[in-house]
Length: 141
Image (tube, rainbow, N blue to C red; front, side):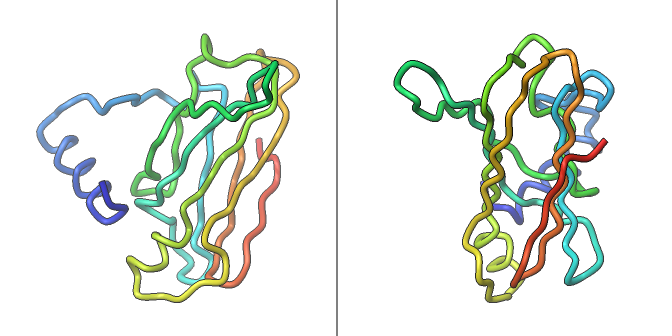
């Protein structure tokens, strides 16, 4: 599914009253992200992202979920409370496809944010501020 069709599919599903796959309230999800397109000043809707966890003993990344940001640029339910465990995680943001869909050249083809979760009882929010030529991230609340 392209980043352009994802928002249209979500809008159609809401209109038809279908439950969205993996839709969880932000309060129930221990891990969330929010992507803002700082070039336009708008949420980065339809951006594809993948969540992975570094697995022992071979230290290989295991993909846990592929998703798209919603109309507000958010991906509220990346993990359920039962899925989260201490370890090293990676959020991969497909920025090249996002910018190409908008007819924009960009410097970074993707952004990877690697972070550590030590307590599965905490909430984790990973915002990404994105432009064609830069990005920044931080641990949000």
